[in-house]
View 1: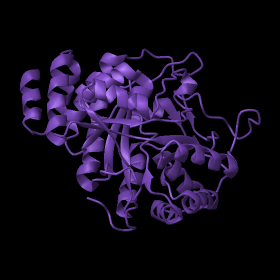
View 2: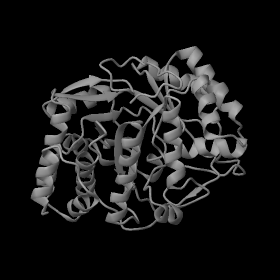
View 3: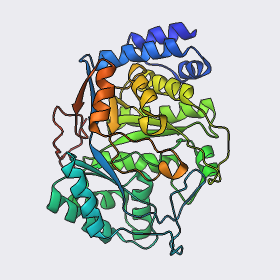
Length: 366
């Protein structure tokens, strides 16, 4: 099939094959890709609405036992000048600031800390849930798999204990490219593909949901981008665990070990459009304005995105590579209106309200 035939199939609701997706990646007809992705987006979300969430990313620690060539944020436990673990009083202050700005969700992410046991994480979750009643979107799959490893526990036991302490959903961080060749080349002492997916699968088994991500534009091939999307789509077919997909480009910095050729906004928009066409079982695609800036973030609303993501009141990981775009709620709403849509705040589950809610333990949401 040629590109136009593939785009017509997707626009008509047909499921793309891996060969279809690869052909689209090899194409440079960005306008046609965007038009087809926007058509699919409008079919899934016919209302003229773009959602967003007021949220803060709190990096409770930067200590990490893994070595990732693309990360300039982490520190080793022995690095007394750089390494930190936030005291609970500081985390409380950050949550209070978020609530004062209208936020109802906190993203908690850290590294793979070699010394903190599961009781430390349970205590933090329980404290925040009891004190603030806020949605806790916490601990990426690499973190959760690490908790199981160092505590010599099963993933199910770890996730159950975290849920009972206050965990509400699992962020999709640490996905990068879900192909082991890429993961082994870029990282050490970090989950491989099946391990990342297993965290999301087990999370679904106990009633949690999560998000899916992709970091593109480094050493991966086009075929490996397609394989990444396939692994996400296959798990979504199996579980329905993902509420959203977010892709972004690798942010190169002279300080990072990974010094490869990178890609710009053209490749970001192309990949976002293809994700909308290929991931037919994931309803929501988030814009990555945090890495692309506000104008490309706005343009992505015509390349398949129906959501502007988070206000990211605080962001430390991407900014450590030198990318420092930021927007507050009114700025996001202005961009959405200027694009011809109505802005609407949401919660993690994309409900009509931005108020938090919980799923039931052992009652998966299809």
